[in-house]
Length: 273
Image 1 (cartoon, helix red, strand yellow):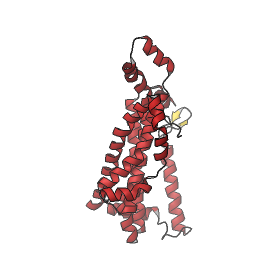
Image 2: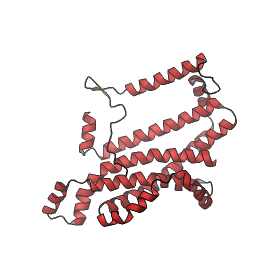
Image 3: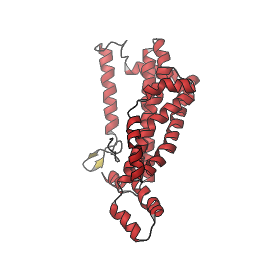
Image 4: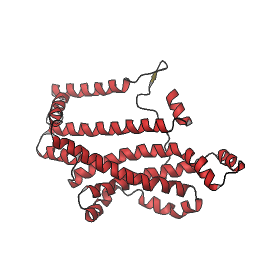
C-alpha cells in the first residue's frame, strides 16, 4: 500500500540565517551546467556523447525559431493536459467516495491493488490497438498513469480526518452529508493537492515516453527525430526543454496549491519555514 504524501517544502524555500535563499537552487543548476561545459570542453567526456552546454543552447536557440518545434510542444502539452483532466475527474471523486465508505473500500481494495502496479507501457499495445497512435492513445495512457496517485491521495485524505472534528460537527447537528462537505473534504484537500502535483509530473513523463516509444507526434517524437539525424546537440536541447516544462508545471501547481489552501495549517507552516 502506497503511503500518503503530504505537502513538502516549496522550491527555493531553503533558509539561511532565518532568510529565504531563493537563489540557492539556481546557483546549483548553474554550477552543474558549468561543470558539464568544462568536462565536455576538456575532453573528459567525448562531445559525441555529451556536447558542450553552449553548443546545446546554440542548437536549441536556432530550433526555437522553427514553428514546427512549437507545434511539437503544443502536441505534448495537449495530451498531458487532457489525460490529467480525465484522471482528475475520475480519480478524486472516486477516492473521496471509496475512502468515506469502509465497505466500499473493502470491496474494491483487491481490485485496485491488482491494477495499480501495472505500468502504462504494459497497456501500450492495447492502447495502440484501440486508439491508434494519435492523441487519443496518449490521453488514455496518461489518464491511466495519473489516475492512481489521485485516487490514493484522496482516499488517504478522507481516512485521515480528525475524529474530534467529525464528532464536533455531529454535535452541532450536521448530518452525514454536511460532515462530508464541511469536514471530510476540507481535511482531504491537502492530500488531493499533493496527489495532483504527483500526477502532473507522472503525466508529463508518460506523455513524452509514449511519444518516444510509439513515434506519436510531440516532444518525444522530436527527440527521436533529431537522434536519427545524429544531431546530438539538438537532442540534448529538446531534452532540456522537457525538463524546463516539468519545472514550470511543478511551480505552477505549487503556487496554485498555496493560493487555494492558504487557510490550511500545512501551507502556513510551509510559508513560515
